[in-house]
Length: 198
Image (cartoon, rainbow, N blue to C red):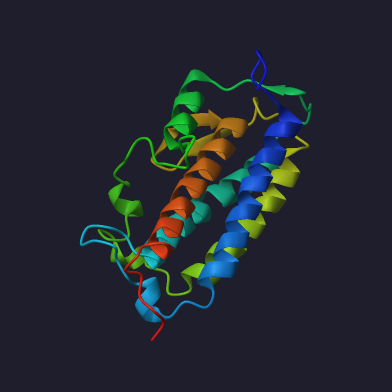
């Protein structure tokens, strides 16, 4: 990070690396889980792996299409070496970033329409496969983002079409949000009571 924000290339590379790590972890650890494992909860109020990935898939369904539309239809093809976050954007993605020890610093309640325990229609019975597919799509989006101005392209957020973030901020928000929940999946997998496959 520089005084002016981020070097655009470095920022996009970092976001790609996080996304590759998420794909790798879910591919290795979750593709062979049994139904009893993917639906196991560490506590009564906690989400299970299927719910976590369904939640992320619902975000991907909204944001990936918007990212693609905005990137492909923008007139702002003048790539800038630096990306400077807006104050709103910075507070959005900072709130999602994991702490230094990969811990969740601030807890949030997911919006009702994106919370699989309150909106069971979000439950994706192919959550693992679809998560991997969505994340591979996100890698392509990040590659396409190299060809546009990360500051000038604006993205409406999922909870309010009026509020728009700079593309760079929106990409960070979505990818740090993914990383935060993949840490949650990791914690479930490492839980001492995590069941053996039936």
